[in-house]
Length: 169
Image (cartoon, rainbow, N blue to C red; front, side, top):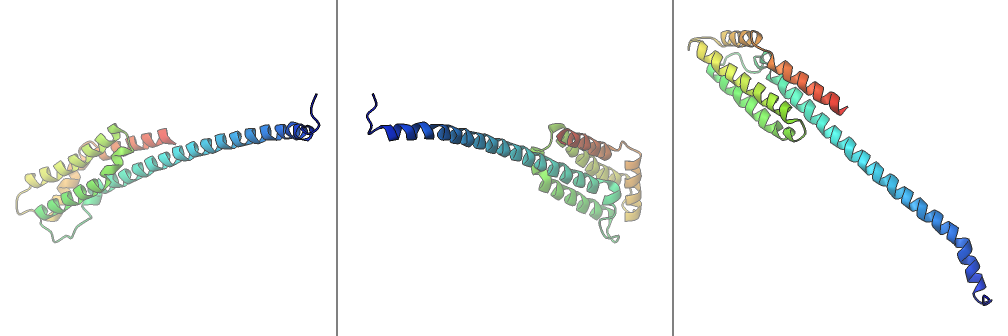
């Protein structure tokens, strides 16, 4: 039936076949595990990027608080100089962090934008309410008091960012 010349080859194939099947299953399992690992790492790095974005925007909001703004510049400035430099500083830091909007929710980004605009409006409103001869310390006091007497939109925004963070973690 079988030619004796082919018998050693047939035996070798019969012996090698289970090893080839095992090797194929091993390679397929290895590839599947590597794909799962890559997906896990991609998800992890995406979460880390979102976490960093939330951290950066929280830091921006902390710096935006009037209690921190009034500590920034030299006491020898005139109120209009303080308003100009503070607004410039806020705008530059906001522009530096603008790319973070890609990693946080639209509503959180809108809250951050609203907080920034509200602080700038409060600066200008305070300046308009004081007379030209007002000292910087008077300006800072009125600015702080007007913020304290209004809705704490910055803390509300930070709380919303904290809630967004809890969804990620």
